[in-house]
Image 1 (cartoon, protein in one colour):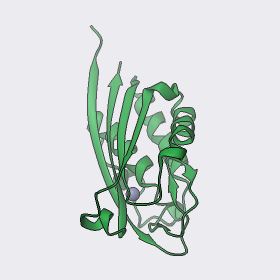
Image 2 (cartoon, helix red, strand yellow):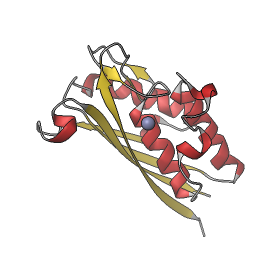
Image 3 (cartoon, helix red, strand yellow):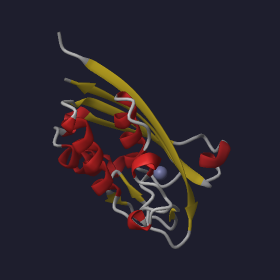
Image 4 (cartoon, helix red, strand yellow):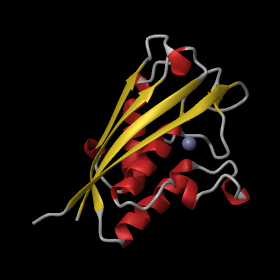
Length: 159
Ligand SMILES: [Zn+2]
């Protein structure tokens, strides 16, 4: 019988000026970007936590602590590739991933195909295995006030 495991992940980063906005490994033109030790790619971080969570391997803070200078400004796709390697070493592969990005602005829809392609390439799966949805928070809460962008993800791993 095929073994399956499921994990979920969540992340949020603050929006600020003088930072680039990178989501799913894709740079998106916007006057605000996300603040963080790495490139603050909130979507990729939520996906990594979902993958790690599926195997009860902890969270990204354990593997890439903000206190470690080697992860300063890190490309989150490099970190994602390392997480993928961790699950592959344990004999697991991605069945599918689904995710939601909550951002009031900018409109993310035009960038979703590029994000799916980029993430699928790094994870060595088909873009059809990566779901990305974008929604606003209807002007409510920190996302709605454009103080930050958050992302939720689930990952199904198969053996
Ligand atoms: Zn993060």
